[in-house]
Length: 120
Image (cartoon, rainbow, N blue to C red; front, side, top):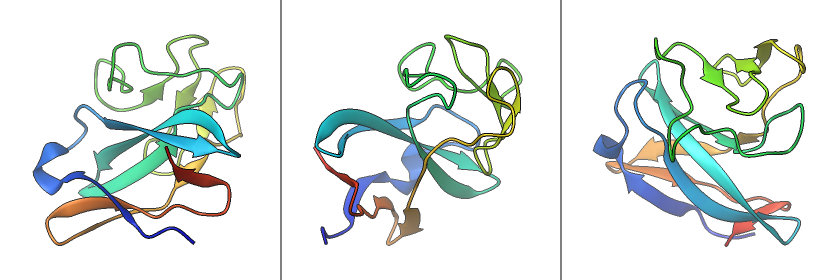
């Protein structure tokens, strides 16, 4: 198992601000993940819409709607709850984004790889 990976300093994530985007591998294929600060804690997801596996940010690191309330897929308009990745509206309602194991400690945000998700 790969050791936890430091992604960024804690203060790089503002509450409901721009995400920290990073490269990783899923089943050996290059993909991207992202981390947001929601309700004071970091949450991370694979940058793949549950409807069609495309990257969702409308600008690099920008996933949230204008009111900074929902994660929105820029391609299909699927609407996700940022705290748990559940799709609440759109073509994949009821499905979820793939969560990433992230935590905050020692003044940094860390990602814990697993059997299917590894560092790039």
